Image 1 (cartoon, helix red, strand yellow):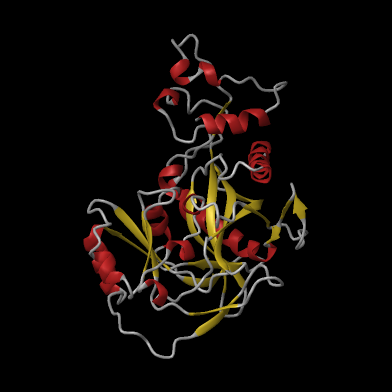
Image 2: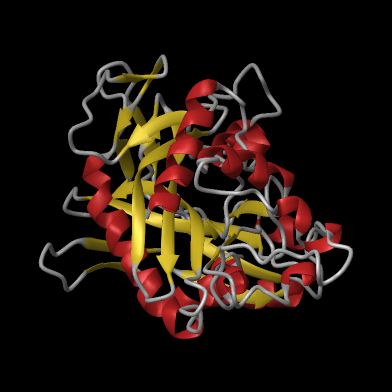
Length: 375
């Protein structure tokens, strides 16, 4: 695609590389004029590249890679048997955190899921537990205390991407949601338990966009540069002010959804998993948020994804296939106050464009792609 070509081409030295993008695929008038590239990058496999996709030296996909890793339904099925936290059996005893996940089809499937988890029981529980939420900006943020949500779920349309097809559903609104005609009978849906307690950024809910890579030999890598994406409004679990409705601006941290409101959008906030990064560090004129304490949990999750997915992704060794990953993690802590991170979803590949076009965001995208190419 144009965005990928614009991003990647300048990162390859013109002394060592020749751009043959204009002589491949649809632009090639005959087999004699086609040039088989050494390195083929395409966000989505195209019919025009099928003839030489398997004979290039490096290819930007694994067999079934996008179909599996970029699919909320397939990823949910991989982890549907796992919930809560467990210790990863490696030498560092890294914390693996997963959210309880259910997969279903259409409204009938939602109603069956709701009944199985008592989602339609709107009886208000007594003695609700209040939690003081951790804020990344400890020194400057106002302390937020919120009641622990009662049986909340995040429902996602597995066939949607970007800003749409995601809802917060709890006993307060389950019946109304079921009658709202927002679900398609033939669509697949995933319900994840609402991550609790969320780590906030300046009093607002946030998630971290993590960049990673899976290779044809089953290895997985995580880049130490990342972005924080933040909700538009201060966090609360109270729905009294909205008549029992869940406000997207409080609970949705999706960059595409929130960028529509320039007055509240926090932009793409730089973050780093490098232990050497300190609070107050500046890069490209922007502060870098240190998140090194969450890196062990993120690494454990990526390792688990690679282990569970690899049996379905084999066959890419001949063209040194890889899968570029954009992974969204919700930061939290377990009962022992250990920092953990829940994987929400994966884009394979993530967009090579930025949401803001600002230099700090453009430079981080360049750095991630450049390191991927060098690897």
